[in-house]
Image (cartoon, helix red, strand yellow):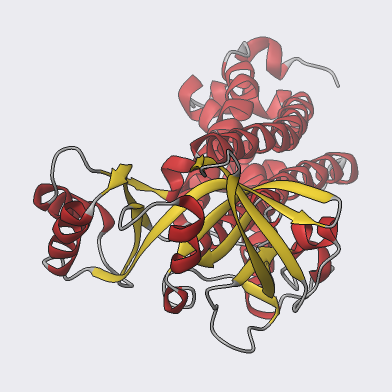
Length: 402
């Protein structure tokens, strides 16, 4: 009986009688579902790609995790070093000072975040694209800044600046501490809050400028590739004093990534409307087919076919139309995304986006969710016409005059 259902479903769908109109309607419904699945899949891949790119840039600039407190004295620093040394998953560590400061270039003044680190840590813990390479390691009187800030200050490597720390305490005459520095490098992350507001200086200059003595504000550290973050953080937290907290770069930018997740959800829902609209095409195709096959349905009912069997025949047709369209859209979409990931034929202006091509990332979970949603929509679109066909009165159906 299952083979009979499939056979009749295919025969009804591709019968020669009025084949042009019904078949054209079915093809258009298939194309609608295919376009919808393709659009949703590629949109998700693009949003995932840009999210991954942003995550890589932020984690590279801020490190994987941070141990912070109001002020870390020598004892705290020793405890942190001991805890990090006992955690094999930790790869690189950098203690830092981070305070607000003012950068002065002639009459131009900009409020920035000054981050003081040991110069050798710039390449091991913090990673970003350099617009101008460092000709020598960051010196005591050196500074690195982002492209946006350098543009606003109109400076280039070799230019002199003055740093002022208004919050580090007062000198005897009531003036804030200051120091003259030389621009040694200009970096670019593509993220305005970094390129326009963050500067790196040496730890030696930071201690002098902020009058911090031997204290630091925190420690940034990275985990080895493949390390399980949750396990490493739990192990490290157990070895640290309770007053010290461990946070990740994602904790610092939670609002940003929540907004991106919401954007992904809304975009997916909007593009899914294409599949929903295409499902109306499936329903209308089935209804036209039922009107075409009323007498045949009556004959089948008179021969003993149950309502359920009739319903299955037309439900199968709807699922076939939608399934072929969804499969085509998914296959084409996955192929397109994988090709873009490998060859990057959709180019972007690298001076604006910092990536040469549209980034795409595809996960199995996204594909499974899309298949589930498309399957549910197609099934619902097939249910109503199938119920209409199954409830036809056999006697009236046989006598029906088309």
